[in-house]
Amino acid sequence: MGIDVIWINPIYQSPNDDNGYDISDFYDIMDDFGTMADFDELLKEVHDRGMKIILDLVINHTSDEHEWFLESRSSKDNHYRDFYIWQPGKPDGSPVNNWESFFGGSVWEYDEQTGEYYMHIFSKKQPDLNWENPRVGKRLYEMTNWWLEKGIDGFRVDAITHIKKKKGYPDLPNPKNRTFVPSNSGHANQPGIDAFLSEFVERTIKNYDVMTVGEAGGAKFEEARHWIGEEDGYFNMIFQFDHLGLWKAKDGELNMDELKKAMTKWQKGLEGQGWNALFIENHDQPRSVSTWGEDNAFRKTSAKAFATFYFFMQGTPFIYQGQEIGMTNVRFDSIETYNDTGLINLYEHETKNGMSYEEMMSYIWKNGRDNARTPMQWSSAPQAGFTTGTPWFGVNPNYPDINVEEAVKDPDSILNYYKKMIKLRKHTPALIYGSYELIAEAHPHVFAYLRLYKNVRYAVIVNLFNAATEIRLSDDLEIEELLLSNYSLIDELNPSMQLGPYEARVYRLANS
Ligand code: TEU
Image (cartoon, rainbow, N blue to C red; front, side, top):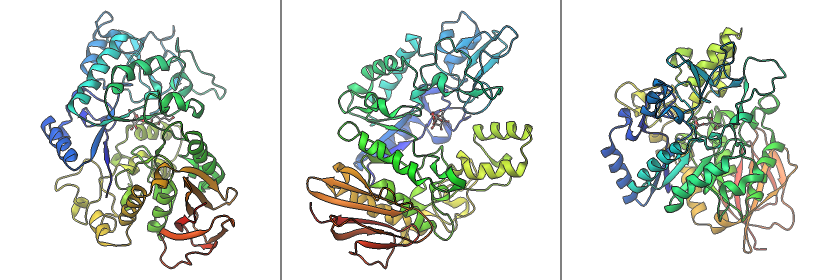
């Protein structure tokens, strides 16, 4: 495709309660994925091709099957007890506070053995590490450096905004009188997190020439410089989530106003200060073509439109596997078929509280993380060519039509469009280094921006809706050349443009 870096989701030893984000041995590879020798070979082969590999670094929690936790839970005076967050319950024996886990229910799990609760902001098989204990940090630095010494090229740092918890674990305001309340304000981006982060960075990644991207849910834009400042930020980039979910607004319609605001805020705000991580999909989100775009008649066109929209902004674009062939959401009939521990907890909780099976399944079909986790569709062979055995999770039944083999052959495919985008970006300094300027700000359907570098100018113009529309470029923007489009027959150089549904164009403009 022309990509430079591969980010692999966790492949460490894990009982796989949360797709490998529950690590039981940081120094070993999960059996399903092979051995350390296989990993070393992969690393070498990737490097031989001039590419790089970054791994997930999961240091907010471990698996409950990690030896530290096995020791920790064994007795109150064990050397590892304070590696995790243990608290007695309330006097009536109920959980320590009203914080709700991301995956449903309390963040506290009672442990018979020692009669105390441990904290887990994700599944109960993912106990949170106690970063207040300096010995935890030491062991994590050691492990991180071990991987860096091996020669990997960096990390995507998981859930890193959550490592500091609010002191004393107080109950959170609960105006709706729920059993548990969403608990971000107890553990996302808490004061004091900076001390943990600076030491971590000082002792590990700062000493290596690597690339890092922090998953920073809850990080405030105003504090972006701490996170990713060019000079002394913790990471090179962060994943922020301001733009996600905006397709849920207004009866499922895209909220253009908010989208323009969210993207532009980060684009303008980081200019000259730091670098954005650009993405519209990952393993925690439903498929973009099904949510932001349209996955039937306009699947190809809308996938390309949303690709164009984010790909030419300032920052490093990430592509999630399958996005490049327009893989779609999936509808499995039965909850039994699903895998995501968060979804299954939610299903149990909501159906117990009276939500109907149909309502629940349509929620899952639309929002579930498993939408993005069906096996990669390589070909029209059984199981989409992913395996000759039984795959770990159901294949999307649309694989005979949507697969890599097909996409490679079709000059008009989404895959070939991505290749063109990558090539164009790589060869156009303005699309890498240029500043960003939103244009047609008030247009309800078109997302348009300029990239400006020295006196060179480019315009990216995308109709993000399923209806034709028009737009007129202002007179000072003189079109010179159409560089890319997802439509074939267009009037190339007219400043008054008729745009078809999901039509996208990239132009080079006359120099300013
Ligand atoms: O996701 C973390 C996560 O869900 C939060 O950081 C959230 O996105 C954010 O706070 C929104 O406010 C990561 C992984 O991507 C996910 O797959 C794992 O399940 C999770 O961590 C636990 O390791």
